Length: 360
Image (cartoon, rainbow, N blue to C red; front, side):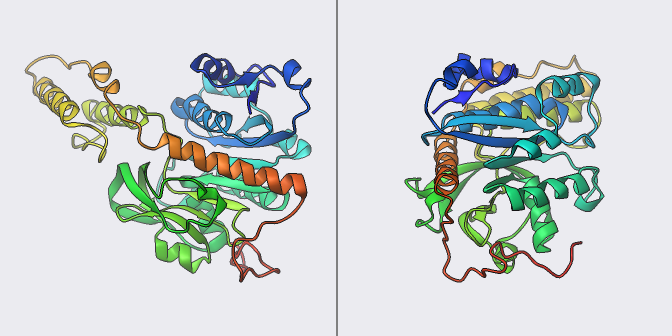
């Protein structure tokens, strides 16, 4: 069922122009269809704020449960913003106090930019903990993306992410390791997921936390897991919401850092992403860049248009199916007011398996 354009957020018109079903509120109010209210805590930096918003709105809008989706974007005021980004947030985003007062059925928490290795030193750390604490007690299910997954693993389960010697960057094959969980119902048993991170929480750490792993990769480790009860908290380490060109944009940004002297080496290719022809084009581009930096010519234009139309998207259909399954389960639980346990040994006193010996 469709997204409901309950405010003037530009993303609604953008998605409508792409073919996503978006209803104006006057039409939505005339249909006797149940509503699902989904929060989006968007912590991404200014340059990725709107794109991340569109990516998650698109996945929600392409879901199949019989409900009208009201998505409520909000962010944390502690995150520094440019005047333009802050004006956008002030006009189109909702204050967290309003979100809390009106309630949510589900919540998505995005990643964020981090300065330094320690999550607990970030400006968003304590406010994020406040949102998570509220969600655990008041929201049926919270989906954490990448950095948010690492934050919850550290705060709630005492599992600190581990720095990696090389960036986990590219599109990687994954396999379903528990085919019985409804989140992966009718999902391909093998599928791709993009990743872009310098840190990881290992399978051993997920197991030590008592979490339920559903999808993992030999190359990148766990991608999809849940809290012990199977629903309250959903963990993504990858970025299934990414657009086809998202990694290309990241690669272009890394090249720009190199040409501006903010990065020592030319960036490697994201793994399993560019084809042979595109690698050759980008290799020629690199030669021209290095020549220009050596004083033998001018900096060439990044060949984005020559590359982007030949990229493949091997992950979106599965991402759409997983999010659709997630919202379907949320709909069932909130509609019938019943829990759906997925493990036989859930502790009724601590169904999420949280480590309870004090907060860090």
